Length: 116
Image 1 (cartoon, rainbow, N blue to C red):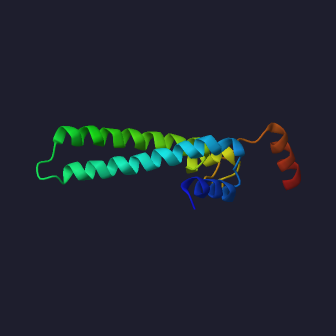
Image 2 (image 1 turned 180 degrees about the horizontal axis):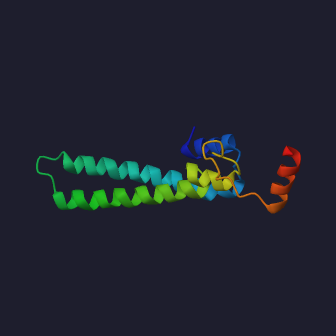
Image 3 (image 1 turned 180 degrees about the vertical axis):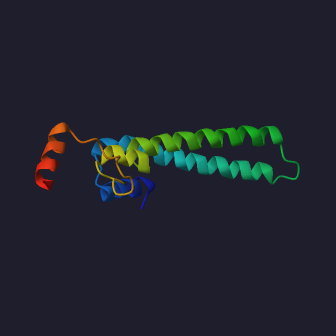
């Protein structure tokens, strides 16, 4: 199963899949593969007999940028808890207690009538 298929299956499982997400899913999958290659290159440079610290720093900065881009794409697709709340109303509602809103005058009067 490809990364694209895994992401599509996950979105279907969450109940938020839409075919319009396909280009973003593809971009996310490509970016994750590129980050993996960049990490391997960084590891190769760092394990050399004489590591090139300038190259290591540049590669590490690229890894950090790719990480930010991956997170942004995951949020776009609703694959983080915060972004999933936007897609699905009520997600996490049990975990978060909404503050009790003040009663209206009508509710107060009705409550007094039923109590007395």
